Length: 89
Image 1 (cartoon, rainbow, N blue to C red):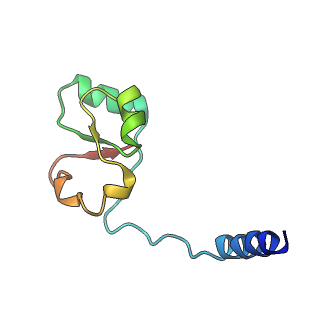
Image 2: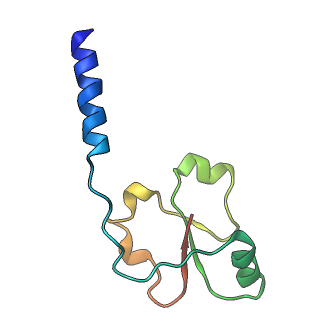
């Protein structure tokens, strides 16, 4: 029991003391769902990437979105559009 308490307290200190994430290399803009829908409805090319797990993606996703779980982003970064707007959700 004592080991569990020490582990939990240590974990809490580490989580609270974690450094904030570095700012992105490129500008980040946020888009609302209705704005994304309007772009798609107009036929604007948008790279929509669902970063949830495959199981959740299969249950429901935005039509035309691609599954790319967040844990795979670094290895699959070359698949992300360099020219079209990219929306991660």
